Image 1: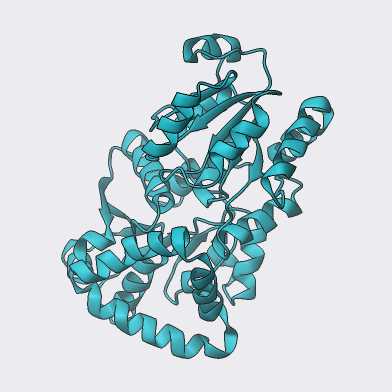
Image 2: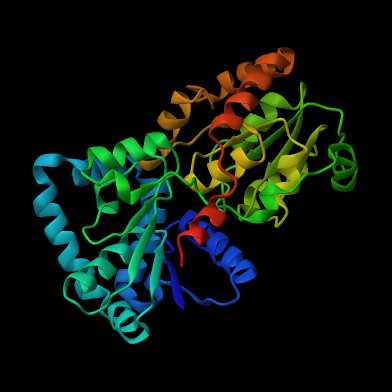
Length: 363
């Protein structure tokens, strides 16, 4: 049996979800012939540049323009025209990927981005492939582009996601609320005190983790300056070398700046709260780690929907400004029962066995 796992490298979340499924299947389903492909590697250079660099530029430098584009593509009155134009552009620029699917003829195509699903469903409609298409929606909300005629199964992050799919006309039988897949390392159990000592932290102190993805964007330095007198702070600067240099030079007490890390799960395990961006894959990881989130630098559209979904389940805070972040943190620190309530709510919605559930439908 051949299974192809596909994603688009427009943001790191789609790749991380794809890798989680790939790694699980590789370890637990040795009879499957597995391949993992970034669809953008099989497109032309201009299209690939627009998808990767264009998205990054918009969310970092022109959020209002991104918000308008997201709203425009959701607007019901314009959907038929926008979908037609987008599909035409996508089909022209993904001929390499289409040829690859026709050549490989996988029994299953698992996609963590709407673009591979759209191309595969188009090929199914034209009788070019017979693959069962499984689309893993990597956010809690659902943009209309995720819905493609010919999709056999939608993997939803939550009941909130399922309701959004139903409102888009998807048949209930095609929706499974398996949760968002995440790497198995986020399911491990850790001894906090031992691990904190290993990381150079005080395991007895109330600890706040600041982490906003690979770019290290957002007011992380300002937040650290507001918090360090009251709590222990770990700042993952990731690829933001300027931020890492500034925090290292400041040498603030109770603040540990880190660059790019490969042990995020360990740092989460010794933290009480995480201040982060509400990307879908990040949320899946912090839910699995039972970590209370405070959301900042929210991208309008997919991330605002994620915040809305979690708020319905009583998880997550979204302060209006960075000064309110300190108030929220100290409220949690001084009222541990509130933190426990968040953790209780997390237990009700987390779905740590998503990869296992997805594996179960591949027969």
